[in-house]
Length: 160
Image (cartoon, rainbow, N blue to C red; front, side, top):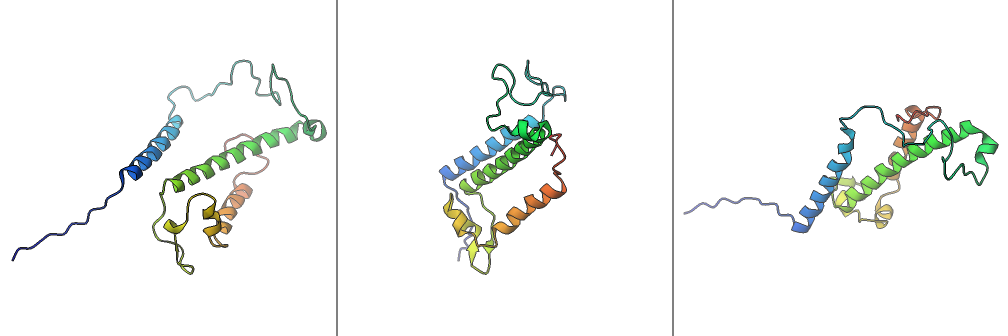
C-alpha cells in the first residue's frame, strides 16, 4: 500500500493579492515621510507668517461669519488646533475604511451572541447597520477619553 501525504494549500485570487500589495505599498509610502534625513526644523513657505492669524496675502484675512471679531484671536488659535486634531482623526478613520474595503479583517467573532464574524460585515455603509448597537460604544469612547486625558483643549502646539 502506498501512503499519500496531504498538504494544505491556501490559495488567494490574484486580484486579492494585487489589492493587498497595493495597500501595503501605500502604507509604506505614507509612513516614509516620518524618516526625513534633513533638518528637524520645518520651514514655513516663503512669505507666510505663522504668527499671524488667518489667511495670508494675496487673499487676505477671510472671516465671513465674524468669529474672530466676536470671540477674539485666542478662540481662532483654539479652532485651528481643533481642526488639526479632527483632520488627524479623519485620516485614521479613512485608513480603517480602506483596510476594511481591501478585505483585511480580524479573524474570529465580532459578536458571539449574535453569531457575527468580522468577515460577515459588508463593505461600505451597509457595514454600519450590520454592527450590533453595543459595537460603536467603545469605538467612540476611546477617542473621547483620549481627548479629555491626553489632548487637552488648552494644548495648541500641534504635537498631539
